[in-house]
Length: 358
Image (cartoon, rainbow, N blue to C red; front, side):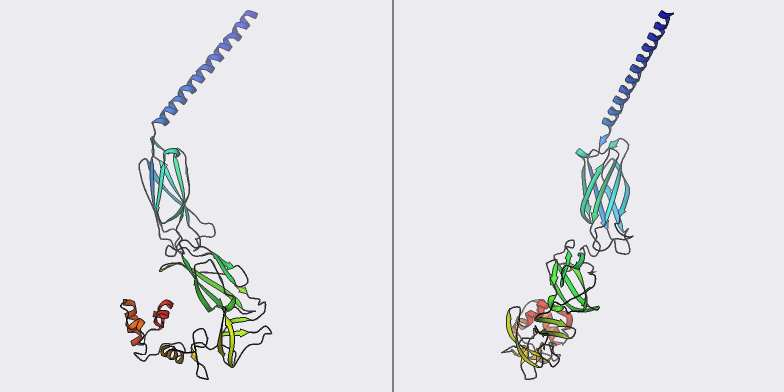
């Protein structure tokens, strides 16, 4: 009985070992077959993704994706919107493009070249498995392909600040008080100090637009701020014009006063309410320019402009300056024609107006 038992136990061991060997063999051959099959899959070498975006604030889905290459199928894209149901002008719209490998093909990161073209700001990531490729892309923001300034805010008591807009080379900024424009400026910086234009106790906002040549972004607006004036002597842009405040809070009025502006001392004339006269003839028949400073020896053009309070008169032929008459430039000839017709008004840029009065 003991020998039989031993024989049975030995038989069981043999069968167990044989089973293990058989299972191992099957695993080996199966694994080897799989590896061999994977090696037979053709590597996808190149993928080209072309993205066209016509998105607007109202339509966040106006995106077209076209893919070219062999061995894969385009499986669509997913939009990633960080806040709310639509992108804002300051955001780079983000999408994830998915491609599926066809049967007999595979993605291999080390040998795969992915080229993304079109309305693209940057490729954020490229993630792949053997069967799938996901490409995350930030698109150009809407608004004429120029990104609006990002995060407009008051960076100081009187300093408007923002972050760079996509492809912006300059910015147009407008200061508003109670919804009405106080002044505007253009800068290449990402901040602007409105100190000279803000009065204590008044509420202000600013709007800023990115520019690149003739192209502009949509405007973005800051939160409202109430300016707390620290006091002191300075020029102030009030609701009805410029005025000057002395350290004791008094102000010049009804006459000539010698004051400094940007380091230059000049004579200025203030009316009875304390506002500066600009581009006018003073009550005692002197000429003040656009900055309010006295022009000691004005030209005929300067006097004529002052007589009309900075407006170009409608009588023909008053401006005969050689800068216009002698110019062969088409734009200058057109300006001359507008002057003769008395129709100059808003058609001229600041640089052109400056050129005319040289």
